[in-house]
Length: 409
Ligand code: NAP
Ligand code: G4F
Image (tube, rainbow, N blue to C red; front, top):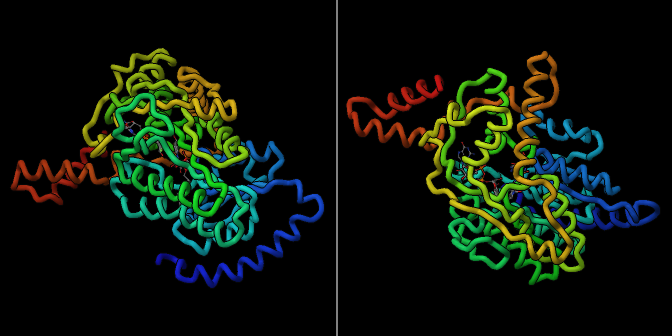
């Protein structure tokens, strides 16, 4: 039992009474027609776009955030909605805080977007990833089961579930063969959602979303790393772009199109699982080429591939078929691959131009530490290999040497 889970049953009794009183008040008068949504992970890429969509539809929106020493609301600020959502502190590892969040928000719909979502990092932090990405969803499913089975639940499932599958394109019935601790944890949640739906008749659905990107994407993900670097190279702020496996293929769409699909799934008469994808797959190299050519540069002059940025195991190709979602609720992507690259590069170019002009505004990049300065498992692995070749140096000395070398990259 972790972080308050042992006291869950005691807490649930007191919260259920509070919840009933709260729900009763909330169903009287005008609040009856105002839908309430709780979004976990509201500080990430998808959370703010979904919050914006729901606010525009008249929802009262609650969002959970993690207490951190430095506030991280820049995306909500960029969309101009930070004061329109109600924020509740909660961590997916902390059952008691999730129970509080559900009780306080009294939602009709819960969108569980919070996750340790970076696949590369899941190899460095497999246990944390498992706790948050696998058990996190189950914590919510248990809360709903005990508190109010009418609450609808959306789980942010992923195309990474298909991992090593060779079927192309991938769809809801394709074999799921996860290739990372992240994907294995998400597979657990995927099945728990289905199990709770079938066992308890709960409205719980999985959105099996393929990669979706935007100017609000985190800088550690490859598309945003590319758009940010291309903008900086064009403006003379950076000289090269260091990448890992540029021959991986992904099905990239535009995040606002995808959050709309999440909402549509939750409005279906019956809960079900849906693939959301564009049906087109492009390599990282193609994304790079398109991004550089958009600003009139030849990518081959700037891109360096670096073994240290390769994952221990990667997913070679993802390409999804959204046919089921198109048939059920008419969903189709609106933004093409070329438009997506342009939107992202233009946004980063504008930001850096404003920065050069001395303007300050909410944005992540100026505070982002150079990823080659982060001592990750890959750097240690490289150092160990090197040290084995030259036994005179200790591994620690070698790590320091690699790090010092990296600092100059
Ligand atoms: P993201 O930008 O990485 O955002 C993740 C969010 O989860 C952030 O708000 C983060 O908070 C929060 N979080 C992380 N650990 C947490 C914890 N222990 N407790 C509470 N909150 C925590 O991810 P995204 O791109 O918006 O994706 C949303 C969801 O969809 C994720 O579950 C992801 O795995 C899934 N997904 C994404 C894609 C995609 O292409 N974007 C595709 C398929 C599925 P901080 O801001 O404090 O870090
Ligand atoms: O941008 P990525 O880190 O995204 P990845 O691993 O596909 O995961 C994202 O999409 C999933 C849906 O399929 C989500 F579930 C997940 O939460 C996340 O949003 O990497 C894309 C590809 C990989 O093959 C990676 O090896 O790009 C390759 N790559 C090559 N060089 C790189 C780099 N990835 C990153 N992050 N950084 C590089 O320098």
